[in-house]
Amino acid sequence: MVRWIAGHLVDHPDEVTVSVVRGEPAKTPITVLELRVHPEDMGQVIGKQGRVAKAIRTVLKAASGRAGREVRLEIVE
Image (cartoon, rainbow, N blue to C red; front, side, top):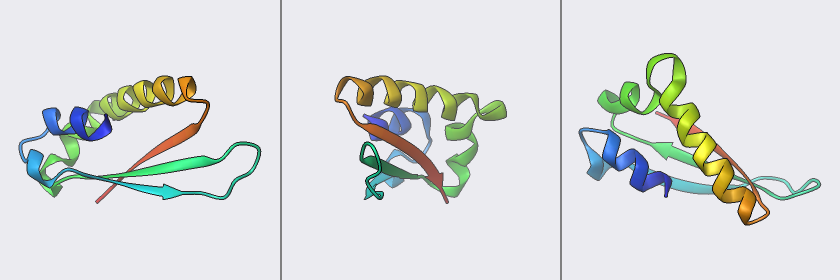
């Protein structure tokens, strides 16, 4: 889902990758997703004052909440 959303926002959709990294299980296991895009597309994924990134995280949180998991999104260069 994250790859699909990010792929439609950027100019280089073929360079969008999402890696799954599992964190340490505490009360609930946390899954960390690392989103990587072309350096020129970072601004489009983050948006003004981080609004696009926040919106992606909100959709991800809603989807992961239905599955009973905690998922965190990190946008890395």
